[in-house]
Length: 207
Image 1: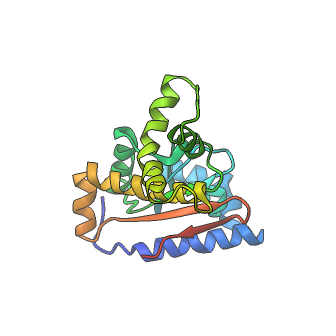
Image 2 (image 1 turned 90 degrees about the vertical axis):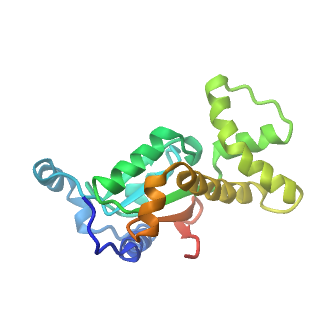
């Protein structure tokens, strides 16, 4: 269970430092010794220092872009980095049971799910089946908000991606009294980020 010495800034600094190593091509020894560490974790169990809610996009593997190894991160992935009860439950489990009390909601540039939602909201026909339609509908409120403010300005997709991250973070707190309470008690922190495919850099929102 969770202790009272939680310092989310330390966890965030580890992610930022890992991303810098990824960008520079200097991987840590720990992340390379996975075959050794996984055997240790089989005996002692997991204690990830952060949870990452990110898109399922194959270009966004969180363990690699944050230069982390086995047991470091608790990963929740779904196209469009949206949340439903199962994703929220996973974050709650990580925070309450595993002590993973920093959660990063991370979108990424050139997100196909957000682009599909933008196409639908702009009146284009997108026929990807009923299940994909349900997922797209979870993203559409964020896209609609961006379009209602300025549908002709530059970087429209990027603005929708950022708003979708913000919307997902709000949804997590709106639907989890457990995480809201933990946040008030300084036992949980939610941070927003966007990963940029062209640079390899994860940019975190000011906190």
